[in-house]
Amino acid sequence: MKECQNCKKDFIIEPDDFAFYEKIKVPSPTFCPECRMQRRFAWRNERTLHRRKCGLTGKDVITCFSPNSGVTVYDRDEWWSDKWDPLEYGITYDFKVPFFEQFKKLLNTVPMPTVFNGRSTNSNYSNHIGEFKDGYLAFAGWEGENITYASRCNGSKDCMDVFAVSDSQMCYDDVRSVKLYQSFFSLDSEACSNSYFLYDCKACTDCFGCTNLRSKSYYIFNQPYSREEYFEKIKSFDLGSHKNLETMRKKFEELKLGALRKFAHMVNTKNVTGDNVVNAANSQQCFDMINEMKDCKYQVHGGWKLNESYDGYGTGAGAELLYEALDTGAQGSRFFFDLVVWTGHDVQYSYNCQSCENCFGCIGVRSKSYCIFNKQYTKEEYETLVPKIIEHMNAMPYKDKEGREYRYGEFFPIELSPFGYNETIAQDYFPLERSEAQMRGYIWVDKEASEHQPTIKAENLPDHIKDADDAILKEVIECSGCQRVYRIIKRELDFLKRFNIALPRKCFECRHQDRFHQVNFPRLYNRQCQCTGSVTRNAQRVASDQTLQATRYANSSSHLHGDELCPNEFETTYAPDRPEVVYCEACYNAEIV
Image 1 (cartoon, rainbow, N blue to C red):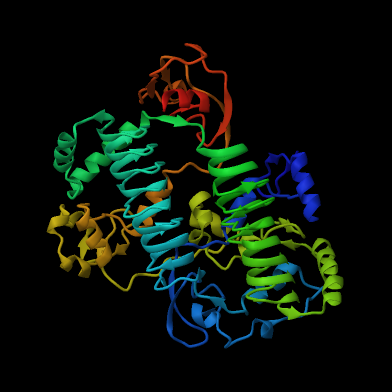
Image 2: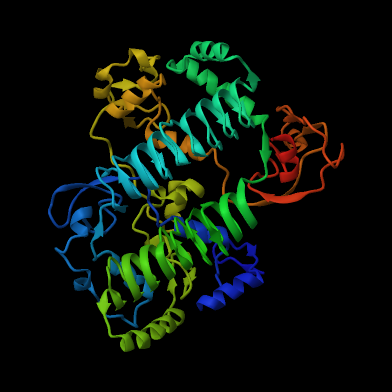
């Protein structure tokens, strides 16, 4: 048992954890897992973009670094060119100053690319993406074409307003789903097509407002119809009307509340805890991880053959032995305390370095070895100096504004992040008010005032998409959520008209937040299966809030435990006070076939 330096709560370091730390030769953490997560996330700005000048050419650019960040930015293509040399900014390590102070000084000197946007074309208004074509406000994704207003969209095409969607085409407003085709407003569904408002459905075609279905067609609100009846009914719903669309959203939310929930989404896993994990083994506390992960812990959003790694976000792609890393991996190994480090070996405390080996405290270095603070050393000099630096980091730790100490083995302090706390994904997962963030010493970046004044309020938009012509593209719309302004773009209007979907009344960021909050926080709770036989009630919710009816689920089959409470226990992201009915795998499978 250990007390967290940050939140002061006790946390447990398991024997397997100590074995991992010993293997990679780092000390055990002094922050608990969630505080470590928050600290990493505060260095990841995915969606906030700014207009600035390129520090090399002077031309206007779009960047994730604000004008007040202290960071010089180069246009992405200029940054990757041979017009400058990162080693020209190298500094000699100063044993009179804490390591993290020196790193911050280097960060304010070495140019950074405007966005982290690898091997992508015509996607300047996107960030932390790779192999994208024609992406617009697309973030944290890999492989996509014509993706608009999206986050964590992978291997997809012609999708808009989606979150955590993979291998899908022509989809709109879907969340955490895979292999969808022309499906809209759906959550946690797979291999479905030509459908609307699905929750936990698989292999369904032409379904509307359905939950927990398998291999069905022509169902509306979980009731079967003939093909002719189905299409006549769907036509009458007319989602091109905003009023009708909102009515259906509300009805679907009510239906979804009564759906059966499996304790976790796991596919082809063995000895794994977490949620939304596919093809993994021997991994704990992992979330949104796919494709051959093993022996990992505390990972969020990644995978692709990630092995023996702890504490990461956006990590993987044939990598191993990663620790405390963001957007890092890609055929790399032994990457510790890194941000955007791809390919190579044994790189520590570095930012945006590619194809490097044996580098420590470097920024923007490419295809180099034996560098410290962007200064070149011989192999012998490097191997002599690095242990001395580590010893110095322990003897002269950095102390933040609240007195927390950062020795070797700690990730970068939040207060040194070049991003405003409210710009980062830390604000998504661990929201703070402006005053609280500043009290802790974190940067807070106020959004720049728009150069455009609203010409129309969202509530005054045409109710029906058929009444919106190209003139709407010139309107500056006041968001009904945050009151900031947004616009409808041509590809968006064409998409909405094609599929008869009403104009959105909120800006992209508010729509993103609506989708983001449909997915549970990556935290596990120990719970018991709620199945009690013929009818299951969520008694916890009734006890905590008498104004709400009990959530009920009527079993359709007999279970081994009869009408007694199922004895199975599990770890789940559904907190005990949540209204949903949550079953173990056995009871869930008995119902959903």
